[in-house]
Image (tube, rainbow, N blue to C red; front, side):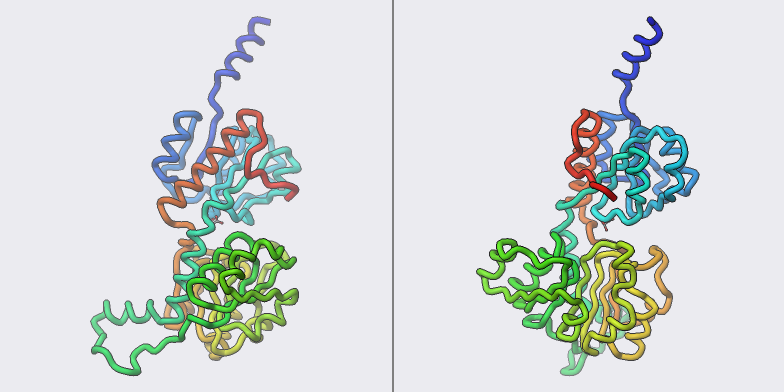
Length: 341
Ligand code: DGY
């Protein structure tokens, strides 16, 4: 009996073991270390399957990122882990259903990266349309011979039509910036049209916003297309050769969502055929590998998945994970609980 009591007291006093699969902003690591038995992957190299298995079999909570691929069959083994607290809003790298079926709780970090990702989307859109990457490379290489009327003429952004695929938080934040900052006309495709009230603030300020139930009907009228839908089996290669062909040849594609939403081979073929004017990409199929054919192209701007990469946002994402851990280990429902995967 004494032994049982001792064990109970020990487990009450025991600090939950939490594994971070990558380095996180210092302020968040410090905060988590105060409360948990914190194990940090200080190598900052993505876990392989063996390391992930070992984390799931030793920790109370594992905090993965987009760079962690967790095979569903790991959940068939004996696990100590009860919570997967993802550092990020997108969770297509986690087999959520398999985890939930084994009784694990899964959380993510919505809201806190909306503005940051929307800012970067506009940056990519402007960069590709105004040939900013190309110009910077030219200048740095010492090849700029001076101003001339026909030098690096890009495409005007203000007043053009922007198509948005996925009108969630980030899609709406992009629409707001584009419509109110650049006078762009917005078309969007979403599973459902948004409530009039969600768009009222924008429309009251003069934004023109049109819903398309059919993506294929929206594409021919877009000067720019920006992707903001999650990666799911339904959106895998949503922008395939046939859909890319529906965009006008002067259109630009911007992807800050997930690489899987675009068929990269079809995109490259469309650019090569001049059936598309350019692309601004932050995410890639199979990243960090990027199709080598993109490297040499001047009609693309290529960023290394920087959508949420500001110190403010990455810290806020970490703090949001901390809030999910705190609620979970206090026996409460985490604020960002993912339901039925
Ligand atoms: C997100 O939160 O989904 C970002 O793309 C990083 O994973």
